[in-house]
Length: 337
Ligand code: TRP
Image (cartoon, rainbow, N blue to C red):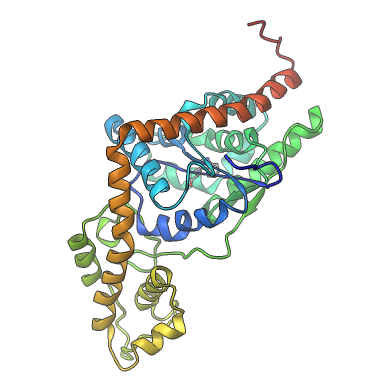
């Protein structure tokens, strides 16, 4: 591992509660690898968070490993950053409990993710779903992270993490670095192919392209992509008036690097019919090496295990140091063994 000492530390996690899709990839993971040279990066599979919603155990296990393979395949070189599985570093659960005691009922009650998820999931509104942000604060504060790259939907949790860190520091003295949310400059917001006014999501499989989808499935999903019913019929970027076409253009731009203006020119005089298969093919070609490399890594069990073993060891080393400090500050008796 190269010298990371002078770099600012960055940390992020993805819940292995669904298979990685084009929205996750283009919006987040694809940009992470550009950050690993600049920052000392920690990326983890947030399996502890996943079980706030009921999971099938075999699927959860498979997805944690698949996701790790996908991270590596998309350029997160384990030699240059720390990749681990959250449950392997028990300090997360321990600090999570402690921070629960410094996070207010009122604060947790205001979290929009809790309100949304509990409204959708009325038969399983469990305590973990409610205290989820305290665990997320632990994830971040354990590593004294400077930056947390997150999407819009996690900004409120990052704000709460800052508030909890400041509160703890005020009571006990400087203990935690107060992290900044990091909103990447690049990173597209990809919408559903079947309903382009909402975000691409695994809960809408027809409009969602998974990284591991077969080429023929990707082609079919793009062929059926919803375009707009305006009369203009030209390929023009206008997210409000033409959400379907604009989303396809955004996807095309993200995978090819072409600008939106270049794309408008490329399709000048052609209708939506030409756009859909072209974008589909471009996505197929850009995901192909990622899927093949992910499958190759996934088949190499010993390698994958060595990555998450080393990652957990390295993460544990950092996490333990913070946790020890916290235990001392709150007044726990030092463990003699
Ligand atoms: N809550 C995040 C999400 O659902 C995942 C997550 C868990 C996370 N712990 C984190 C993200 C720490 C950033 C930092 O997307």
